[in-house]
Image 1 (cartoon, helix red, strand yellow):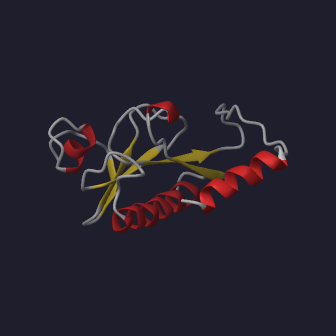
Image 2: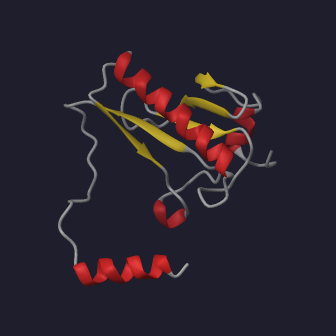
Length: 136
């Protein structure tokens, strides 16, 4: 447990949260600043700063838990869809530095908008980025 980590304290039961699911590796709880009805967070119990720091085992456990929370959102809350979101680093809007996945139920009439419009990209730039990955 990281000493000053809010999510570590929630996982340990030291801070209150509306828990909806937990197991030996993960805890899922309601977000206190929800984007939509039922917005939840899924965290590993073990502290990891972000996506690049979390163990493969905890990442897998969080993914399975997020899938269950997504099914709950669709089945019990009547969500029409679900977004999973992870922010890795401050530039990506990470504000709590304990790895977590947002499970955001989506409803046909919800006001949440993503300010990214999918459009065909520059193929040379795409190929160059792919080439950079291949040299890792």
